[in-house]
Image 1 (cartoon, rainbow, N blue to C red):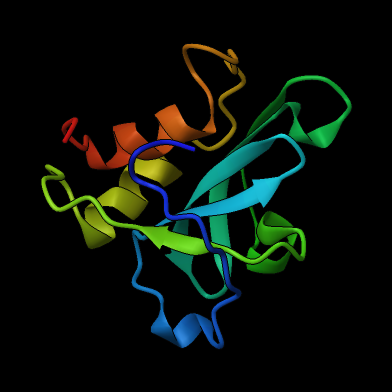
Image 2 (image 1 turned 90 degrees about the horizontal axis):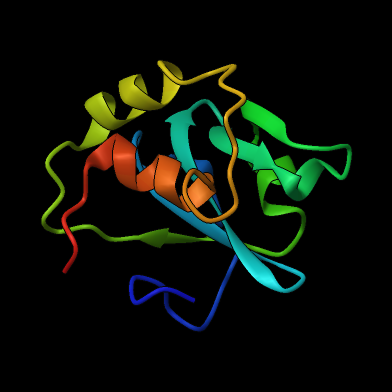
Length: 120
């Protein structure tokens, strides 16, 4: 896990509690997966290798599909350059992109780019 993530994950009781532009993280077998909440129960993420059919694109999915029944948490970026609707707009601008690279352009990189979070 990165320095931004906490050790416990829990499913949010309601997406009403989530802010548009929130950076979400969920556990997957052997790694953590990242996405940007864009409202209405939808998350933009880099499907990458999570789709098991090759390198998936940046796509919008339901929060249930994103969390894959593993729960999720919000990652805080107190020094982010962009927040809220601008983060969501930046995520939407990358929909359909198919340039996934495990080490240099993955789901976490996408989320950090959307907020241009500085390294803390």
